Image (cartoon, rainbow, N blue to C red; front, side, top):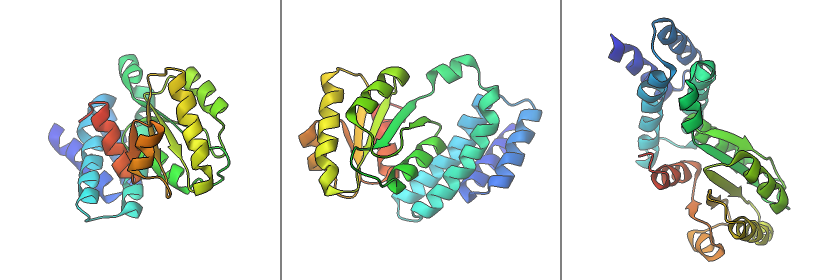
Length: 212
């Protein structure tokens, strides 16, 4: 019975059915499952399947986002039920589009995908200065800091922000991404990781944080 309830939640996340995910999570809570069980053995199982399909080219970003939204709907219901210890150990992403860049589509996709994978996400928005990144990083102490850029003209800003974060000696991993950004550029500016897409970034972060 236990396996059936949780696998049903996983199936619904994979299908991206927000309404039924909510109903199934509420049912599981009523039946006495812990929030951690529902997250790890239900929601995450479904999202991991989605990630696998994306890696194999069977689905694309729109389908990933639909599943991520359904998973987030489940997480929202679980939020009040997580144990204090579970909340403390939840990984956190601080993300923003770098100064001079007013585009947020890529950043928003990354935020949704990371939320869907169970991360707490602090979204700083667009046109974020190095001072703001530093201030918020010291305040929130994230496990990962994500920098997004869509314009070649703002890559200098990205380089400057990475330098300031590294000079400060923060322990957070720094991941960069966006249309003009490459693996080579990420290495050149001293970033820890490069994400060619939201799912690629998530997989690399999970490996770096030893979550897989």
